[in-house]
Image 1 (tube, rainbow over the protein chains, first blue to last red):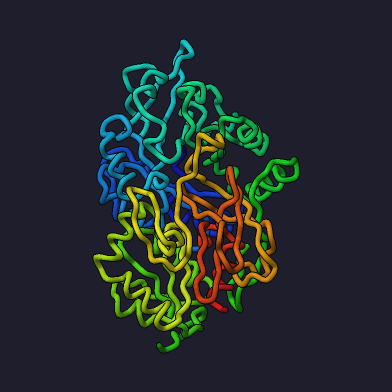
Image 2 (spheres, each protein chain N blue to C red; image 1 turned 45 degrees about the vertical axis):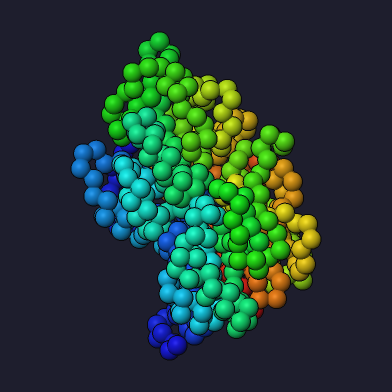
Length: 245
Length: 216
């Protein structure tokens, strides 16, 4: 994780609503450690997602149905939950009942240990769960959420490629869509992720992928090499003043 | 309704987005604003009844949604606007299913009966597909379709749903998507329009479709 700047910096340097036309979905996570400010996060979310006509998942610190509802009314289509998967599964059930299973993304942070086994971290990656990852996951059911987001804490931010062994930690009978995250530094990493049959989507938060035309080029390169990504017209003029990239 | 004098908002059509407490209304409103249309998000039956055009977005449970529509009398307001006054309506995602006859989600519930179909769950066992159906997928459409004008058949749109409407026995032009089986991706017949996918989440294809609905 790297601290880079505030929203104004982000919008100024990365022209976010432009970048959003080269991705399939956006995930916005409040990874604040310590006291969070949900209102500020919602306002930031609203502002960030203006001009983003793409599905948006938001989360970080969701502990109540009302917090989730606030995010959903601030531009999010789905909510991302992490710690409550283990500490309060009843909340997950409530979220699914209230908003629909497809509205809830379960996020798992994996850490690889010295002996090559895996741990799951909760509370913004600060607290490890007691049992081995594969054992902890046996106590969950895959369809308690609509999608799973698997993040490698070790690879995150390194640009060294995904850790495919995190997928090995999932119970074999799981069949809910999986998003792989943590470590992608270029288009070939993204391609390797998509090529794996266990993976339904690949995610990147590496800002080098956001600089200039990095994302657009990565997408074009994947499409050209035969990867079946969605496509849409590049630059479309909708009115006197509005052009969508 | 007065035209709003600004650089971008130039349209005077009264578009009302029905708010029954469930759904991401901000994104729909945002997309409309981008296209140059102001819209009202409303919980009031009278406002919904008097709309020039209605949009019915929705996510979540069919049963809860119909209960919410019924409790607030928005179900009657929608029917009055659409059947009584002939105003056009666009149902999006769960909103499309709510326009149908019924759904088995959370028990058997009656819908608004504007589309002659019954919503059913995707059968994961039979086809080995993951449920929900999430992500971009291609929609086949007719060249005579209003919604898909200037979009072309096979364009990608964003889907996120576990229930769907089957194609059998429907009149009008339809968009068709395949996920294990062909299912209804888009519906248009007279003043009733609906999409299973989210046009406000489907990049430029979706923006174009929304524009087509607003301008028809």
